[in-house]
Image 1 (cartoon, rainbow, N blue to C red):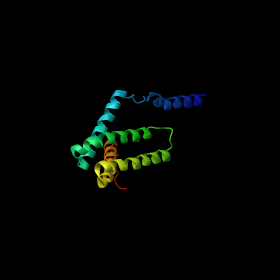
Image 2 (spheres, helix red, strand yellow; image 1 turned 135 degrees about the vertical axis):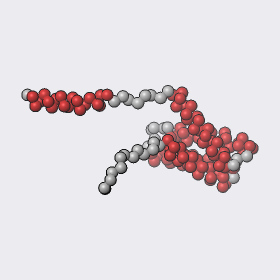
Image 3 (cartoon, rainbow, N blue to C red; image 1 turned 180 degrees about the vertical axis):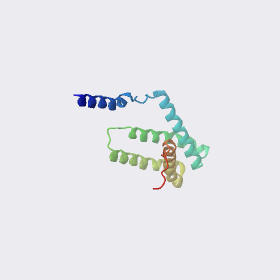
Image 4 (cartoon, rainbow, N blue to C red; image 1 turned 30 degrees about the vertical axis):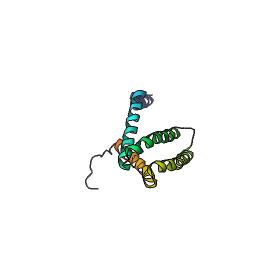
Length: 141
């Protein structure tokens, strides 16, 4: 009897920390949208700087870029698509827009645009990824 009571108490104490965990707070949608808009603005500024776009080219490039970005973003957020279909759809969007970017920027800078976009995304991921935590150093191993 005492052994069963002891097991019951220990299992109840072991489950208590699970009950104490609080779910992460939900982010305000307006704050999330503001953050996304800021990131998109920084991305556009980075691309314009890297491509060394003139004012005349900028007036033609920016609306085209926003249209391209809207299509890619909507495809990324489409949860009905599996991963391979999503990547294939994005590749088709890039192929379609490459000709349009080439008409505005020229062939070399249109190709470089996609590289700049990838580089910015990689920098963003590195910056947002939490730094690895190092545990205590062990000696003698």
